Length: 453
Length: 46
Image (cartoon, rainbow over all chains, first blue to last red; front, side):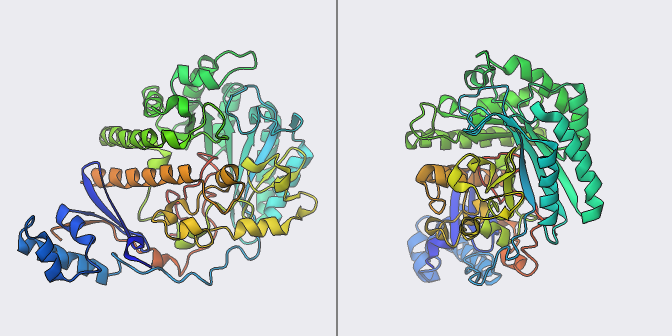
């Protein structure tokens, strides 16, 4: 492996930063070290002094060189790749997470919806109690020795089938003991049908809730429209405010989508913050390139600048308000996932499946409705084992572009659905998404460096 | 050290030994649903 693949260095938010790719250690360095790093593995100290003595004092170069050597000896700089060639992942085909499509119907018609206004290109339908119960049993029975099982109530809009959500939470609690499992329920909602009772139920029973809104009123209303074509902002904002106020310390995310119509999405993030929301997530739109709101190569430079701009705003806010979180700028360098999880990615199609109202299984919610990705059903389990194995074996070592990428242990190979919709091939990463992810990682680390002063 | 401040001295290779327990959260499940960011997840086995 060449030197470039061992470290990644960058300058952002007034910090020179070096990431040691294989160990995951991160260092904030001064400009001398930053410059020496380019030569360190190929040239000896004398050659380096010769090259840099016009800029830096000789003693400082020697000291910096010594510090780099120390870290290298400790395995924290220029470390070699671990041998993961024998890595076997999920050999027992354990399933531990499920996206339950309780309603293939929606009471909004958002222009960019990957679920085609809730029905995923099929008939509008609601999941029955029978299918719902069978789903939870299927998950419990196929989860081997995993204790924590995740179930997200999704749609369409899950509040359109809220009695089922309530019944399934109660059924889940009922069977937890029998199976010795713990269900972690979450829900993703557009908020239209939220009322005090639903808020209380969700706040009591859901580990996390994802609230969909796009930030500024005009941005939201341009995409997120009611069935009659009106903007939805004024209906939803007060409900989300109330929901979050009642939620107290429990987790939630207010989640927006940005498109080529709002590349200045940091304004939407700040709008969320100014409206009292502290845990936010704003995601690039997933759509085909032909749509006029799609994100394309021509937008890349502006989006990357926007992430940098927002990272500066984020540092300023974080210094005053430590409870503010942007999902993609959260990074815990010490308590993060193990190298195995970092290598295999999200687990879609193997550890994670989506269930339709009819009890069909897909590798994840974003593939629902794509018939070639139908992977099984609740009665027969996973039938298309070839497809499951394809998902299982699509990781940072098998994807050519990922193998040499410095960010591979952070995005873990990226989103299979993004790859499929960009290239019709889950093994070819979505390049635009990769560039955004790399910038978000750099921003996250530079934020930590600034907050750790 | 005068020239280098280590922000994280964790060595990912050390996680190989007891890694892969599979208890951690499915990465895109509960906040984004449209991308994959594993690096910001928590280990459930620390």
